[in-house]
Amino acid sequence: NAGVTQTPKFQVLKTGQSMTLQCAQDMNHNSMYWYRQDPGMGLRLIYYSASEGTTDKGEVPNGYNVSRLNKREFSLRLESAAPSQTSVYFCASSEGGGTGKRYGYTFGSGTRLTVV
Amino acid sequence: AQKITQTQPGMFVQEKEAVTLDCTYDTSDPSYGLFWYKQPSSGEMIFLIYQGSYDQQNATEGRYSLNFQKARKSANLVISASQLGDSAMYFCAMRGPGWKAGTALIFGKGTTLSVSS
Image 1: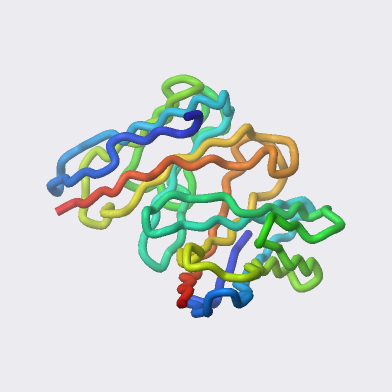
Image 2: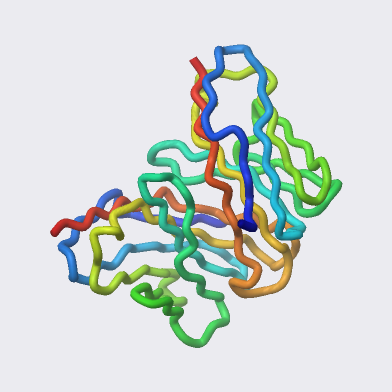
């Protein structure tokens, strides 16, 4: 099925370890996003990529890096994981620009990350 | 700065009743879009309904309708004839100013809806 694919679905890390969360979309969308979801906080934007070759910080970028590898793929890297990064991570994509729900957002199924 | 506020942490409703989930927003931009998403216990984000700031009529999608009151900056979700499967977390979100590429969604903190039989 067309959509946004995130890997892995679950991960447990030890404090200080590094890992990369992968995200790929097959809808030819221009824009991609990384969010984290914590209880009682809603979804907060970590980083986004308006188009291939560009990335920008969102609301909570500290401790993360991103790479827009190509139009399809947008990865999120934790260089030195901390317990405060325990969260559910969502990748999303959108066509970008224009108006209306035709330019809506498609979400991946999420990655549940625990840092111990 | 843009902001979405959902003041109801939890709502309870009986099957077949209607329920309204509140959402207020703050933006100085005249052009924006408002979204509602459902997140069941399985965790995925399911798009429900969209309202553009220039839309003349309130959006409807099946049992979902959006009560858009622009002057009050509110965009409440109305679910008619609740079903047990409606039990989930519901998020209100707003697309940031303008329509350029990379305009991210800003989310409220969510409302947990519980439907009982």
